[in-house]
Length: 182
Image (cartoon, rainbow, N blue to C red; front, side):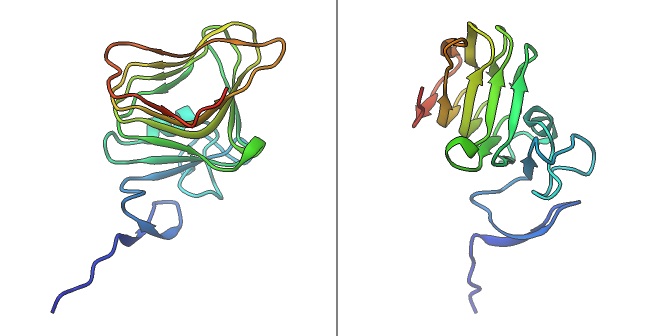
């Protein structure tokens, strides 16, 4: 007798909820981030009801090359200072939830602010960026391979502009930039 197989499975994340999930979408851990209701600390992030507060904290909880996904909740706002957000765990996807102005919005607030992507196979999708200071040097600094930026939008104001959207090195092979608007 042959057993029928599907891509769906039941998962219970420690401190989180039971879910029926598609392994092709979430082979690793799933994390949630919200500046509205989140807390960076032990026991948070496994459920949209008790999310983490910042993206960088969530990245540091991920395991390399396991397919971890970070969902950033609608209405999330986060300031990115000179220390930046460091995308240094390979195989992670950051996916913003929501549409239009309700998508997660990250504001660069120092001329040296950037999103540094040194990890391979890193994806950022459906997130908005802006600046609160004039002449931010570069929004993304990509040195990892197989990086994808999808539906990443940047908007300026009259008093705050970005000098470069993307800066890469020769190590940034197979970079995909699609559906992005400025």
